[in-house]
Amino acid sequence: MSLKWLEARHFRNLTHISVDLDPGLNLFFGDNGSGKTSLLESSYFLSTARSFRDTGLDPVIQRGALDCLLRGKVQTGDMEHHIGISRDRGGSREIKINSEATRKSSELARLLPALILGPHSVDLLIGSPTLRRRFLNWGLFHVKPGPVSSDRSSTSVTATGSSSTDFPANWEEANRCLRQRNLLLRQYTANSQAGNTKELETWSARLASYANQIDRQRAQYVELYRPLFTEIVQQLAGIDGVAFDYYRGWHRETDLLDIYLKEADLDQKRGFTQKGFQRADVRITVSGQPASKVCSRGELKSLVWAMILAQGALASDTSTSEGARGTLYLIDDLASEFDEEHRRRVCKFLVETGQQVLLTGVEEKSLLVACKNQYGRLFHVKHGEVEVQEH
Image (tube, rainbow, N blue to C red; front, top):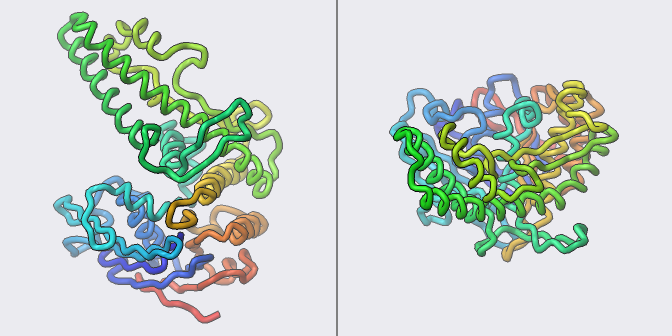
């Protein structure tokens, strides 16, 4: 999979760009504020229908413009897909795939899996557990672990698709049940009464069932993911004693439905469900200690980049009926994140994966040195315009 062509109109400081991309390593250099990050953001927006910088809509629309438009061509095996998304200041959104309108941004993500790495990425380790749950969910959206035998090493992996064990379907139903249970809990709290116990038990049972499915899928995903993460940590950081562990959101030896039934009164007092899939987390330790407590800032960056690169590598190992899936890596200002040696290690890994990469930096020379001139295409970004450079 690769993004062959990208067009952006009135997106941030990009008035209009049209860029033909290489299926491998694409380098973008230019001064700060020239539009490099906006270009990466436009690619990410085309994949997810949202920004990695702002939660609001208005900031991505260029000042003075009424709307923004992004279009692209995605090559998947022998097939070429035309995708596009437009947003206006009124909040309206239009997504098209091969000229057909769709309401689901997830269809964009399936065609163009994209991961962003940059100065903000360290938040994945030191920030809210919400970020790490989102990390797990991205992996399960793009990778469906097969049945797990008693020998964990025999777990298979396929591209996600529609089935009774499809993670997106389980996720949607689990959240619906969680919202309904929380609504009942708040109603009972507001009315200062025990409420309809049978109704609460019904929704508790449904929620526990879907939460258990999500837990199994997450645990299976981590079993597939962990060896890749360990390998890439050694390649990038050389840190020994690193462990990647999954916490499901409730005690491992306790049945979730039993928890819901026994702690119903406490949940009612709080007005929300305290335990479950929505409280899951992943924990990175070094020699048994939390990485966030014992690692330097540079080591934390290396660990986080290993986490994200491993996730992309696992997703790229899957396949669809149309061919290899692949992952688009969007890397913002590599030079600000690592010293020269670590930059070379990152670029070496990326080149060897054969995946598509959009990588930015201020200085042309530092990018060329980092990748040892093993790149597909070089671009100069200046005042919101993108110009291809000759080799």
